[in-house]
Image (spheres, rainbow, N blue to C red):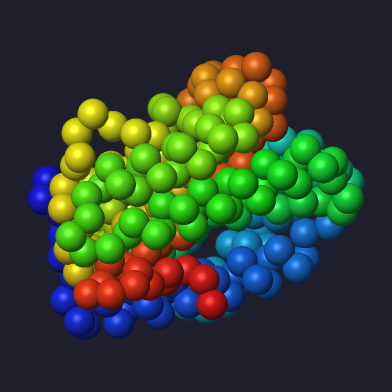
Length: 250
Ligand code: MF3
Ligand code: CO
């Protein structure tokens, strides 16, 4: 599939979608407290998305049962919200969702701290977020995709972290997942040349330990193979003539 270049009109809508998602996260994260189930977190999040007149696109996507992925500690991504998974002080919780507004998608993920967390956990959150910004430095017209991938992977490895290889970032637009795929580690090929109007989800998934992950029998939940903590940070980004525009951050 070709990589789509968005028109001015499409970009306007995606900007609005992104802004709404940024608001949803602000409102949701404020409400997450120790003792809450991941099911409750999803319920609150879904209501916020609908309150803004948007559609929670994960719900029903390839059979996924919820609006959010809520992934606790060693769950890397795609944790299914459950009434019997209670978030506790000291946990790290990754939230990931996609919403649509007027037919266009916005996708973002945040890993948050529940109360006081260990120094090690905090460093993992900080580095994972910074991985996104390291990649973003190269999200400019004329650069190649692999410039982003390499920057992310090299930054994470400085800290001895494992960069998840089985899951990658992606293009986005009318569809949740469009070409190109955006790995978080260096590739042999330089990949496509970036052009203004491309909208990309850059989403480092970083393990405190080894890079290997395991896929659970529920067909969704992805955990670190070694049981170490994992973090995820994602935004939808617009490639422009100049600096990239982060659509899902205010
Ligand atoms: N942010 C995730 C992704 O990039 C959303 C997938 S959740 C799913 O692909 F449930 F919709 F699969
Ligand atoms: Co994504």
